[in-house]
Length: 149
Image 1: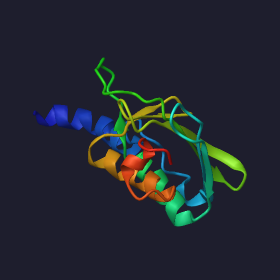
Image 2 (image 1 turned 120 degrees about the vertical axis):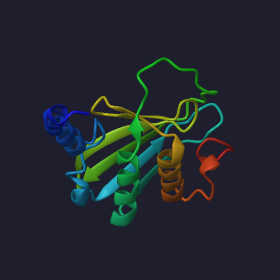
Image 3 (image 1 turned 135 degrees about the horizontal axis):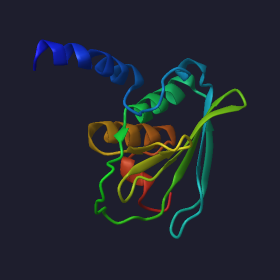
């Protein structure tokens, strides 16, 4: 790479580093006070509703979600989809900061209310699903999609 090209790309690289390349902005993490998690009734799953107010748990779940990579823009084939969505709503007191719809089956996508779609795979995906299962009191990550919990 020439010195001129490197200097020309410097502002672009700095902007990308500061914005997180389309991931969730971390600015309001310190203000999160609760997370409400809802799983509607599905074919073989009972409905679930839980509000968590432990700030450490709320922050850990938010940060793990923020660490997920953007969903690939190219078409892909996904494993079986069982239509198990968790609506995860992060709140500051009674104000909704962000809502996400997370599906641990199929392509493991996490759709944000901002329109961004994240990909819950790899090490960051494992950390997110593990944190979600733990927050819900599930001993195993697979409890998010299997059994009748």
